[in-house]
Image (tube, rainbow, N blue to C red; front, side, top):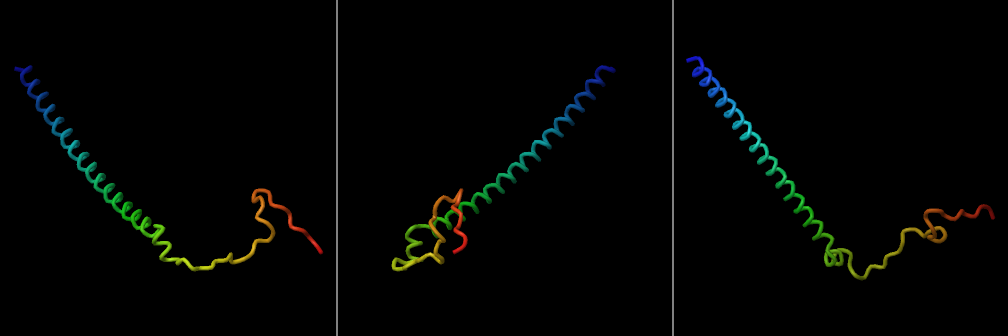
Amino acid sequence: MLKLLFCLLCAVLLGIVMLLLRQEQLTLRHQAAELHARIERQQSRLWSQQLQIAAYTAPNAIAATVGDDLDLEPASRLAGEAGNWITPKPRPTGP
C-alpha cells in the first residue's frame, strides 16, 4: 500500500513538473515570435531607407538635381601643391 501511494505521489509530481516545463516552453516560443516580428519590422524599415537612399543617389537623380551645365570651382585655392598629406612640406617663412 505504501509503495502504491509513493508511486502515485511521484506520478503526480512528475505531471506537475511536465506541465511547468510545457508552460515555460510556450512562454519562450511566444517571446521568440515577438522578437522575430520585431526583427522583421526593423528589417523592413531598413530596406525602406536603403531604397530611398538608392533612389536619391541614382545617377539620373543626381544629374537631374545638379544639372549638366554647372561651372563649379573650388571654394578656396589650395596653398601650395596638394603634395603628401602625411608629411606636409613646411611653409616658407619670411620675405
